[in-house]
Every structure is written in structure tokens, then in C-alpha cells.
Image 1 (cartoon, rainbow, N blue to C red):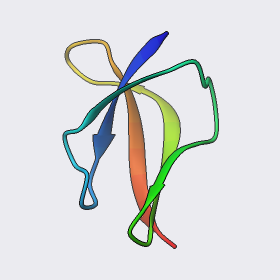
Image 2 (cartoon, one colour):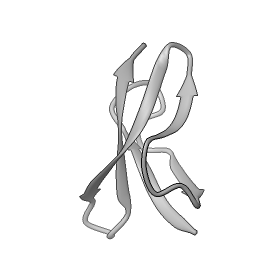
Image 3 (spheres, helix red, strand yellow):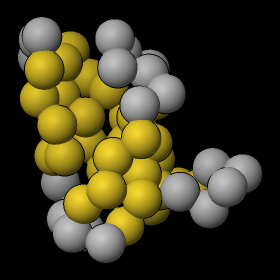
Image 4 (cartoon, rainbow, N blue to C red):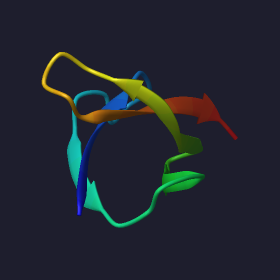
Length: 52
């Protein structure tokens, strides 16, 4: 399991655990969160928000 943090958009700051290693991790309220290779200061992968 990988811990990731959602950045930007309405779910900003939410932490998810997933086995997904690439692509979309969440779609909610007209926003898609795409997993990146970037890490935050706690070594969680970052998923960035994009409006659908």
C-alpha cells in the first residue's frame, strides 16, 4: 500500500492509501486527482487535482 496526499482542489490535504502506482486515484465533484512521482515532506506521493 502506498500513502498519498491529495493536493489542490476540494479534497486538498486528504490522505489516501492505495495500491495504484499511476494514473487517476480519485474522481469527485468535477475534479480528477492524478498520481505524480512527487513526494511531500513526509514521503507521501502527491496526487494533483485537475478540473474535469
